[in-house]
Length: 545
Image (cartoon, rainbow, N blue to C red; front, top):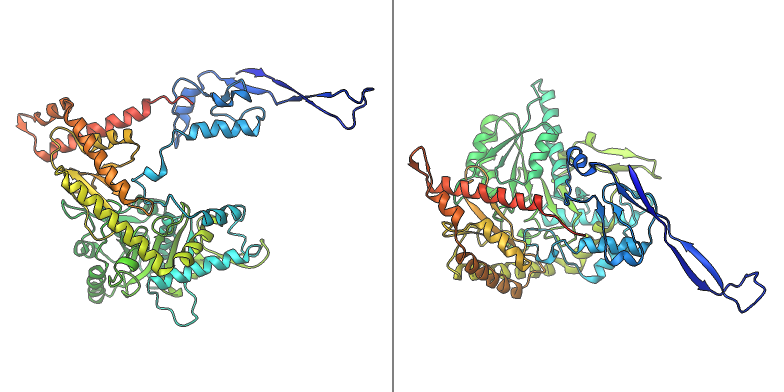
């Protein structure tokens, strides 16, 4: 491995108070040598990295070094891209190099694919920065932070109608997001089921969870990581959530819980938790089982209580034993905070709670990770007391009104079929009415030129032939932006209409074994082609830093 080293010496003149020079008026020269910068040029490093790196991949195929134009006043040589530099560089250069690269990221405010909060008030930003060096797990050292977390748990549990008496503390914990919250809730269900089966002398090695095929990927992770079978209720066209009737039919003696989604990632729709509860109560009476329900309210947990207070989905239903919600979605906090609350203490097995004392006092802990920052917990408490019930209701009302503006604007174009419902998470999911020339993936790809990030995706089984675009309405998405987005959609469609649809036309006229393809087969083939094309473009793109 060759190393090309460049040392740059900067000469700075300054007056010296302790100079031993004979003349008091002579300025002493101080020589400052910034540490040598190393330019690594390892042989075949790029190809080796691509073979060995599993979870990440390189952007640039041609160079393994980082070049920064604006930082050249500090450094004159390149930095290794995939190895730690041999020597230090000035802090200004480090900042400028990273800042230059980050300019190539998308604008979070225009990322309409994400449910995650991208704006908070400056006062909350300040609180977060002031507590960024606090480790949340050090409860004895930071008792007030722990108290704020406990207040959040109790506020959220009561928001979800937990059956708590006067002065009774709620059971729950803050997490890094709903993924961790779901893991913890799933572990509690699995352990409860195993303990009961052991006591009855029955097998306890084949647990399963019943969900819809529209669940978020964290449920698949839980099932695979913790060896639980995931039994999914397939979707169908125009019905993109779990069917409670089919879900209850799939429940058996090994089912540890049925997971209902309050706010589907695909369409924002709330599943019918009330009907699921009623059907499951009857099945439990008939079989002698006591299959419970978990509600994944990651997106809808901070929406339903304010927009649909009469909707029964939470602890008002007897079989709902635990609920998770994402504070960093419509809880209005930056990414990194989720919550899980249980109906009662008996729904969380004691053996899952660990006790440690090496941080200064006995501390109970039930998390998958240990250390984490306190900032998001403090920010959640800020939002709860700053906004109150009235403030959250106003924010959710505004989100829904802006969703309706966007929905109506898209309908007026005459080009889109709206797939999402008016009630639920404030988002708009929609498809092209006519995809014979161009499809949703082309629309999403072309829209990126205007700065908007709008995802296109296919539905899960058995609705794979349906492709949709989705726009999530967050607090910082205004009516003006909604109107501008509709205008940009019209520009994109006009531009695509002027282009030849060579690929699509060729595919649409294709036949399989002399038999003309059905519209569903054509749509699947075109969708697969464009997904592959876009992935190829992303893989082959060279980025100059």
